[in-house]
Length: 551
Image (cartoon, rainbow, N blue to C red; front, side):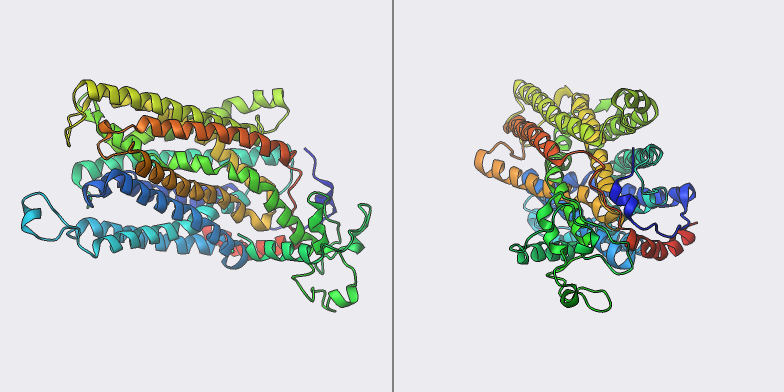
């Protein structure tokens, strides 16, 4: 792969020493501890809300969807704060402290009494939750989300920066792909630990034990203000455009050429101060700002296809409720209902290892891509598998419900387990895990590869932002279906959760078609990234001391 002409024209930043491989264990360890703590607490949360706080299944699901949404929205703000102000190291440290405080508050909700002392509650019915319990619970959720907003977008970008040479060479592409793959492999194993060991302890021992907004807006406003001004010819040199003082002059690309009006120089004496700054940044922007904005705009359609996976990943509460109604004994051990999601993580982990170590090289010879499959091929395959997973989930639930009705378990409030092994849920979890391994990891690599270095944290946080919108959409779908159809009652045997899964399967299939259109419109990968060389040296200065501290 060759370096683009624009990147060759940019000034070379002063070489800075990076931590390299020695820093990676320390960086990933922090993320592992966050994942173990977070997933260890959240895996059983649907049961915690329904059993301890007496919420209905639908209400508890909506609450968790919104918590998931907030947790995935906040990383974009953490990314902006890291890229523009504090640096990734400080944001990670601050997020870790806030997240720890939120987890402590959540533990308090399990320690402190939850119900008012009334004769009805003492008799086992009519319990009322104390008025301060829910605010305490939601505050703990908010703090954990706030902490995740600092950790999630920065850790991955901070680790990748230790290895990335910011070129399009095959060696650099393979190095980054290996890092991303094994990063998720290690995190997957940590989630397996959280979803098995910690969940088992909870079940057995009880509950106690600005998205670059200013820059984007300035470019769009400047382009609009200059909409009647003629554009220079495509052959115009860099003197026709405004470049930041001290940087090698360059011309903007012709993609989304309308936006180039924001950086066209028409009267340099009046538009640029003697110090080289734009007199009106809402009318004149640098070429770098314009190209950064183009990178964001061009990625948005493909990013929007990542919203539907957020719905699927976030709806894992229902499979937990399904597993609870089924036979979960293997040998002499009863598997916790919340632990079946571990099969998705195991599948993701195995896939990443097999793909990176076994499949990449033969696929590279066949496709000519250093990554084996292109990023968009992996993302599209993952979206298709999400649709298949939901279709399988609908069939499994239909069989489970039919078995429950055959056992006359439809009407009892607390029915006996259905004579059907919960291991029947494993295929849908495995398909979901494989879809995540293809699509979600592909998204991360795509955003990191297509965005300039100064926006690395923002690019990485786009995945979380899509998952956040997916959680909001998921809660809306659950709310509409619950209110409009009655398919989702608390007693699964009286509902039609299989119809709910079919709705998701149809939406996922439509999303695949939409992704194909967006991928076609985007064009070739690796041709839209612009290296912000004029800011690279300053960022390296800012983070060099942090890398030294880690070592």
